Length: 150
Length: 293
Image 1 (cartoon, rainbow over the protein chains, first blue to last red):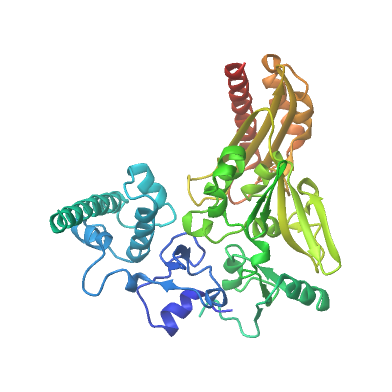
Image 2 (cartoon, rainbow over the protein chains, first blue to last red; image 1 turned 120 degrees about the vertical axis):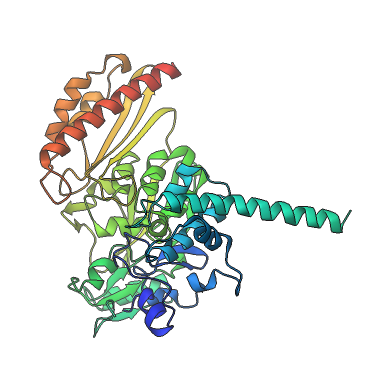
C-alpha cells in the first residue's frame, strides 16, 4: 500500500512536497486532494484514484507566483525551506476559507505545520501580508472593472 | 518507499454490500481502512500485524447526515471537518464540534472519520467523551443484518470493541438535546493543536425547575477505555443546581477513573487535572443555569 506522498515524490518526480515526520504531525507533505488540504503521508495512494491532486508545483501560475508565495519571499517566511511548501499549502487553504484572518486565525490555520527554524513570526507575517495583498489585488480588479464598464 | 510493504493488498469494494460480503467470506482477513489517519502511521513504520486492507473511503452509503426530530445520524465516514462545519451540530452538539476541532489539525480533520475514531479504539481519542455525553449509539452492520449498540458499551478493553470481524460501523446516532441544557468540553494536552490528550472531559446537563434532571460526564485518557463517570453523575443528578457539592463531586470522580503513567503524562497529574476541570465545569454549570433562571 503506497502512500500518496511516495507516489508524488518518487513516481511523479514532484519533489516540492516534503517528508518531515511521516506521521501527520508536521504538515511538510501537505497537498490538496479534491481541493481539501491533506497530509499526503497519511493518504493511501489507492484513495487518490480519480481524485484531483494539486501539489506545491501547481500553486504558482506558470512564472507568476501565488500571492502567498510572493509574500513568503518578501517577508522572509522561509529559512531552511523544508516546511515552506507545506506552510504555503496550509496558508492557501486558510485564505480560501478565511480571506482576512487575524493573527489567532492564522496561527490556527497553520497549527498542523511545524517549523524548526523561524519561531513562526515571519511565517505569520507572510500570511498576513498575503491576505492584505489579495485585498489590494481585488480592489484593483474592481476599479479596473469599473473603468471598463462605466 | 516507506509505505510499500511487499505482499500487502488493498481491496476497494464497489458497494457496502460488497464490503460486507468480503468481510463475511474471509473472516478476520481484511482490516477496514477509512481516512487512514490512524492506520497509516503504524503501517508505514512496519508495525501493523495485518496486511490486507478493505478501503471504505469511496462508499457513499457511509457518508452524509440524517436529521430527524429526535436524533442526528452521522455516516461512519463523516470527517471531523464535516462535523466542525455543520451548523446544526454547532448549535445542538457543541461538545462534538469542539472535539472535532481539537483532533489533529485541518489536514487530519479533512480526512479522519468519526467511525474510524471509534473503531481505532484509543482511550485518548477526543470524540468519545463528547459522544458519551450525548448518549450516542453505534450501528454495526454485517451481511446478516445490523444492530445498534449504546456507545458506552462499545469499548470492552484497551483497543478492544464489541465489533465482530465481519461487522462494520455504518452509522452513529446522537439524541438531540431538549429543554434547558449546558454543554462543556475541555481537552488538556501539551499544546493546543495536534497534541494527544493527557485528559479530556465532556459534560452535558439538563435542568428542570432548578433541579439537574440529567447529567452525563465523559472522560478520555483516564482509563483503558473512554468512560462515563457514573459516581459523579449519580451524585449530581437530582440536585438543586445551587446546592451542588463541588468538592464532594471532585472526590467522587476518583472512584470513576483509573489513569496510568505513560509517555504523555502521569496518573497523579491526570487525577489532579481531571478533578480541577470537573470543579471548573460544575462552577460554570451553576453560573450558566443561574443566568438562565
